Image (tube, rainbow, N blue to C red; front, side):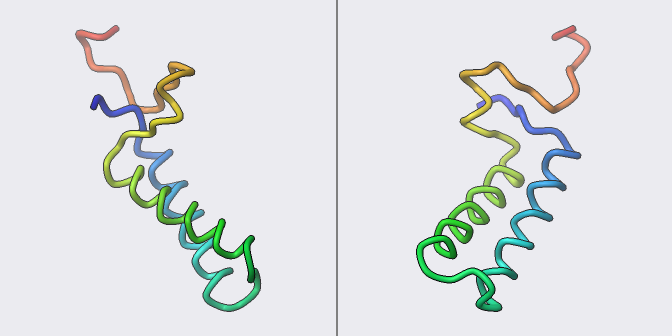
Length: 71
């Protein structure tokens, strides 16, 4: 797996995951939508720490900086 998630993207994902978790655990969003937000938060944390987003692959998106040999 080549990294395709950059630093700014990772930070954004972690912030959004924290917001989603707070919304769920404070009871602001409940029911099925709360579960969806919690699952999204877990996925965002995972992709932020691994540096790889599977959804970026089919679209060829890379938010990480290119190395010299890739330019």
